[in-house]
Length: 151
Image (cartoon, rainbow, N blue to C red; front, side, top):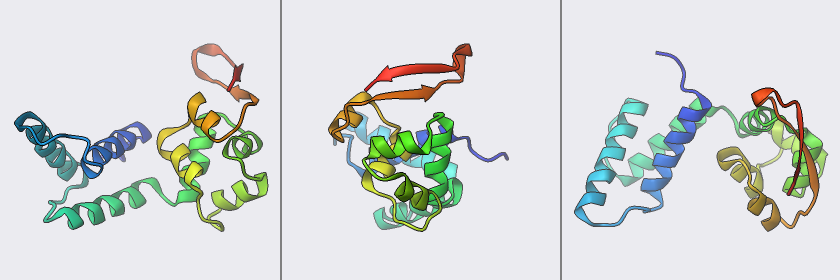
């Protein structure tokens, strides 16, 4: 079987967050959905969960194995979006040197960097970080090579 795509991993992260953050209520329909999601996650990682703690440990291990180191994930997410190190450093409010060190796993990933890895960023996230800048993105889809976006 082939390795999961980045999109499949993001879906798995979303399912994991739904369960781990208690996003479902305790009504019968939500309980059935919770069971369905847990069964799906067991199929994805090819292991059964014995307890809540076991669920978190096994899912954490799965994400580390499938996604590689934090630095690799950060670099891959940045490159996938066509963003330079300089631009991402500005968005995250850190120096380019610190970003390079995070990408090479010599510095711990910051909370904004972790958010970027798992959720990308939106205009509201950038504004929450206190940045009101005009940022140039390289966009490869639909034949557009460069686009300017006000964030």
